[in-house]
Image (cartoon, rainbow, N blue to C red; front, side):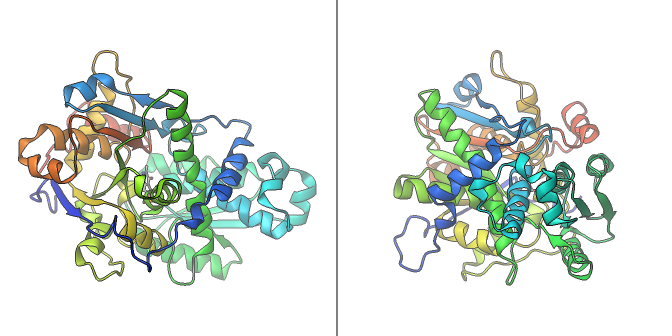
Length: 411
Ligand SMILES: Cc1ncc(COP(=O)(O)O)c(C=O)c1O
């Protein structure tokens, strides 16, 4: 496979992340007030429950750090991934604007009432996805008795396609890679009076992706609440995997707004073949840069060639480290999480979900990364928060990796 010979882990340290500079991007899109509204909206879902925050003391001890937490998004609303948090909030916000009612005054259930449905009429929500975001949009549209049309790139997993179809969405698998598929979805929405609910932003398409990112705040808000309840100290490091960077920037924005200079160190992780944020950080001319080609990686959710422009500005100004890594690191994370040590919980984590844990273990146990862990201040006293952003969203592939050892090459 292309790029198999690439080194397992590449690091870029962002020297500007902690500098005080007047021109830095605002993170007020993650204000306390907005986070409160998002959380209240998600809490209005009848099936809402915070997903588990696991602690892995045996593994932490084994790799010689103080603490590892894993937020397990395989439990999110029965959809096996975190993504629905963003799509559902953006759709609800859009509908609240149409109805002229504050989102804070609208519950999910209220949006389902015949009274509102009649006012809104039938709306077609359109999106492009590697799987998880589209499933969240389709789920929300079905719940609200609206329509969804979902575009997926060539090579999409049939299991993921079928799961979106099960939510009554129309699914179109294109002959293009992810970024071109996003363009096709945008054109389709424009030509068919649809509403594009895309989880990435570009010049002229800002509002809806901002709402999507705000929707992701529930994830970190839950974590901090769970840590408080457990009497835990704050993490020293937060590992965040990135496709277009919306999730990572949402959490980075949240942490920056809430904790300022006292925020934990953040590590942005991408697969080698789709490392557009890493590339942008490395070029260092303040602009986002795309990567081209097939974006081949087992981490389907991270196979994006173009950064979200809002996310890029946040990560450029505040993220501490950018990492590009091989597929083997994700495979390693999946195997470790699914085969836990003694009393540590077993966690089913998919390709895009497990890369953070795989990276942490590799950094701390492979001595060729001694310099990297030093640069990243990963020591005995470190407390690391990891997001397992999906479960086995492609179960056949999951088993090929975890049972049969496929994609084990670490680079
Ligand atoms: C499981 C999973 N994790 C992480 C991401 C990355 O999110 P983003 O594209 O916002 O960077 C995705 C994106 O689809 C995903 O599906």
